[in-house]
Length: 258
Image (cartoon, rainbow, N blue to C red; front, side, top):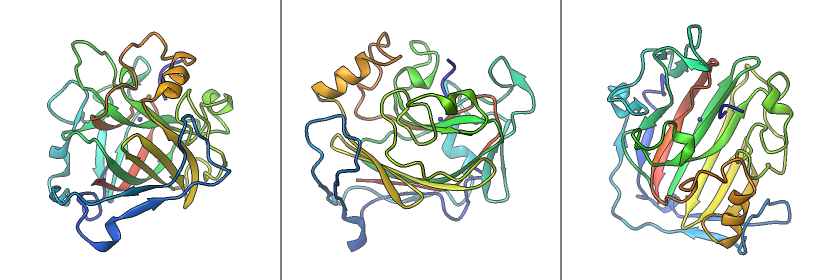
């Protein structure tokens, strides 16, 4: 996580459009949702018919790059259908030849799913709506939102409210602690459609909130991001995987434009 987010399966990492009957997704609310907005009603994701499908089954490294660079840092290893950050050589609190990695493409309304596994005592994150301008923002988390990836049992952040695995970092905690422990795979889904944000963890909906309304602005104003004037304001941006100086693995990543 922030200081104080693959080999991505070559066969399963997809940037996809809505191109079949199963691509219309309905998110339905219940009393267990965490809501930071005025409308937690169900939202239908409709196919606009404009999004082509891009497979990352070959040359996956060309689809991602380290923040502010042209290519992915060499500490990010692609092997065994997984992308793995080898954090054995440190550079301050991050990794030498690592850095946060970002998609080359930007996304507005999207459905992202992936599996992650964290090392014992580890910390990382899945970021989205990143505005990449390294001359203005030193780190992606100065603009992008983050689902926390962390070993709750061993890392200090895992003991803090709104800093635990799956939380919308420093903003909203998830409603159910359904993560598997460090060293085991977890499946997550992040769906954002017209300001309606939903997190699923290991098959269960754990967070549902509204972005960019007045309630959202108040939420950010009460967080550690309050002095970052552009944080959480961009409605399109890149998706990122974080180098926080710990080994972390990602696989089965799919990004579907809505």
